Length: 369
Image (cartoon, rainbow, N blue to C red; front, side, top):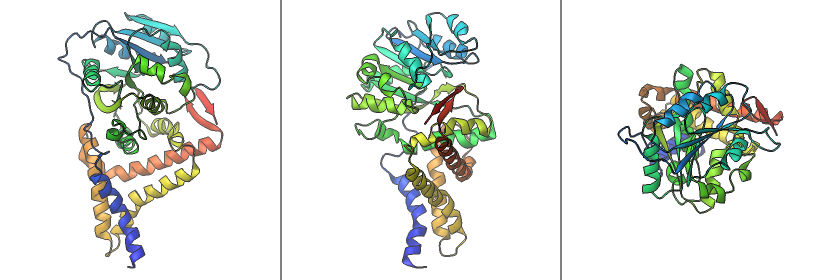
């Protein structure tokens, strides 16, 4: 084997071993906050929960019931975004909950951000909890999040929700979704003063109301499809400190279950994540081929099988902390290459949608290019 071929064969092993050795450890689960059920009754009167909701009758009751258990004094605002079901009626039945009827979506706005923009004018407290309508907080989670925010002197803290895993496709793809998100946005870098990486999980964000205003939310990001990371970047650029972590106490009530549902969730923003750049899409595809495909090719050669095996072992080791955190069998790491194949396929599907004139499709709304 020539020098050039040996260098090419070494690329996958260098990629995966290098990932394990990076000082910011994007594969780890060390950034986390769990619910504290022993917190007792905590005064939460400084927080208003702002929930955008569109046709969420199936889950809004569970979301609001979870908030009732967090402490006393918590105020809740539900912005009913033109729902055609009983979302507003269910929300109005809960104490300390105000339902704001949403106006029709103006041109140039994403639906969620327009709902939040309408709701923010009703917030009178120093802190705002931005919560998706399908997110249930376990008892003691919000007090624990508040303690993290105060002790670490952060103005913006968010938590990645625990996605439901009820089927083969859920178990195959949803932990990998969080895994890839952490690779793209290493939490330790995002949580540092490093300005070039800023990330958040939009399902659960506790933020100083003043920071929201100074960052220009939500008008300044009205058309953003990846609104959480865009908001985190603007808050960070405004001079505030952000923090992002994992939690099993922030539970997504959204059922996926099949490949199509997960595809729709990923494809609505995957090409947006790449900046709608065909060149970047091709680069990412080549990287995936080297990272996940080439190691199997190397296994078939007596000269390179050790390099292929090293790459595969390092790859699976990088995935084990995520599987362990979510209580899954570690043998799922063997299927990470299959997950990668499906994710790159969904990214191409997202790009094809864009090239056909559809930037995103969500909640019965289509956002054109």
